[in-house]
Length: 367
Image (cartoon, rainbow, N blue to C red; front, top):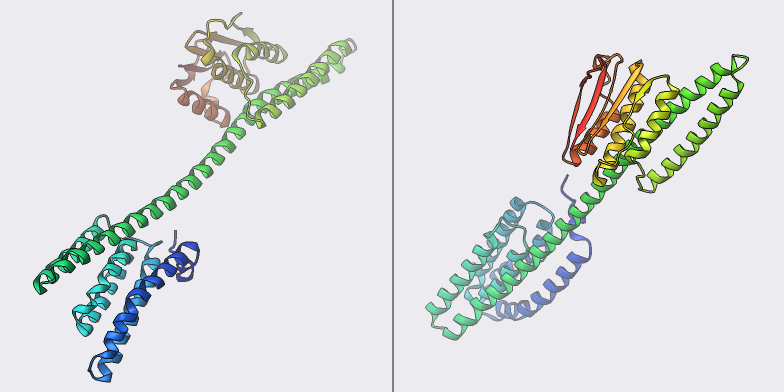
């Protein structure tokens, strides 16, 4: 992601509050120091140069921390180097009286984006140098007040700046999680729509084709009418499944899928060997096993060219196998099986795809 422009960095409620606070703090110190510069008996050129150095430092103090706030630590180090250089120039021209800029310098360092603990070390160094300087001059009372002010203001602004950055990172993470949740939900809906409509439309197509063939025979009208009625029921069921899926509800279960499998295999002319009950499957696995049955039976009807299909169920395993063309036909891939893999892996299970004992294709899931 590219760095924000200078205008983007300096706009917004955060920078406005900082500029207001910086302006007030500058007023507290600038006016007495300005009088000090212009009240001494020094050449006019020195006064102009000292005043310019003060203006440059104050401008950097107000602007540089905000420039670094949305950039990397390298930019922060450059900003701090500029601040220290300008402050050194002020002290060089004005003298020890300019050490009162250090509490504000500590504030600026605390607000600048720096590598971990660098701001802490710089603020401690300013406080230590201030303490040594005041003690050397014999200002024992000032030796306590000035370093304490540097430490308290510097650490307070540093903590405040870290809190701002952590809040911004948290908001960015929340946005990323929201985007990921939307993508995951889209993937779930796409997977479920494939699983639901793929099965239903396959059976509808088979039954419609069968009804068409029945209509071609003189005595097939009644059978065709029954098949068309089944197509209507399947279409209504598919519509209900789509509505439920879009609403986020999954009504798939292993018992219902066994019943649907029997109907689908019969309609396709495939002999079905199905368990008579699913009571041994625990409740926590019934939805997952239902999805496996749906995908497995759909693949048998669509791709296997089989004459026999067998389903085996246990408390922890479901297997769908046939005597058709087998895995060499490319049946081991596709959106449906990818969706099954995702579901099974989420449940901590394994998917096994290969040749069956019947000589065709086998899809087995064990949890």
